[in-house]
Length: 339
Ligand code: SF4
Image 1 (cartoon, protein in one colour):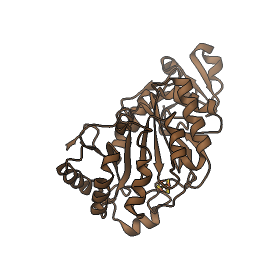
Image 2: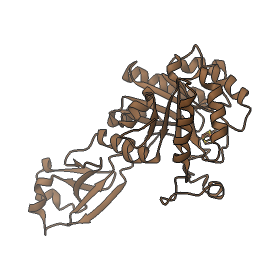
Image 3: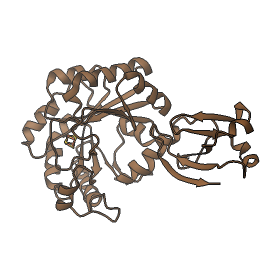
Image 4: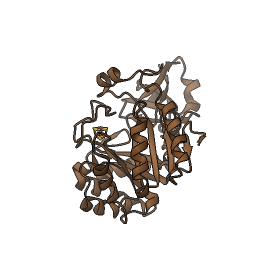
């Protein structure tokens, strides 16, 4: 096992879905917030939990044309299909996957997270026609055999290298997880553990069950126990690739790298953190002071974005703000300063 440059832990190699994800080359396609399960650790926000809403990254959408637009702006080479449970809205899941393959080509890599509850041979067969990689999220409260029976249905539909399991690293369930992985190993090629986090919806229950680190949302010992578990699994020689994905990887590497690839608008400049910086005013007088080619109307924020080369000449004449924001659909501001 080694620590990766993305602040995660790895035994073997990363599955294709993760390879693209860590570089920020994958978009996240949230199919629906509806789910067939109600896990006590569910990481969904209140805005998404149990709601039949779809998001491409931060963009809520109803029409596939908006989905395509978001993928284009993100310059993604693939996407992950997630939820909720994508199987609860299978038609929508298939429509999204087929649309993306048609628009961006066969090589556009799609992986999917599937809770095992609704899995059957028929829906897996349908998915295998348009999805490249499947990651099962087993229910550790169920009988191991019943869960493995579901996962084994993927055999023959996907190559083994494209079948894996993904689950949170519960620090108090190492033994149970170890037993499960040993038994499921003939059917999969990779295991992806996620550092356990406290989500908005699950906050009360999680805080009763676990202590968190100083950041207030990652669960204590999840990483340590994950590292120990990987070492223990390595000794079993199961020929599995095992990755422990940390919150640091998601927030500092994957997210930042995704931002860096996102298209930006004229007169803005990217920072090394992936945010953008630009100058803007709400004062319409700027239209008399500048040629049309030196500003653009920003209808979303009801402001006028100014060519940075012209800012100096406007100082003292109109109120200008220097804005740093995330180049995502919601354009959340990180810092605003009057100059
Ligand atoms: S399967 Fe996933 S989305 Fe559904 S309740 Fe469990 S953690 Fe939440």
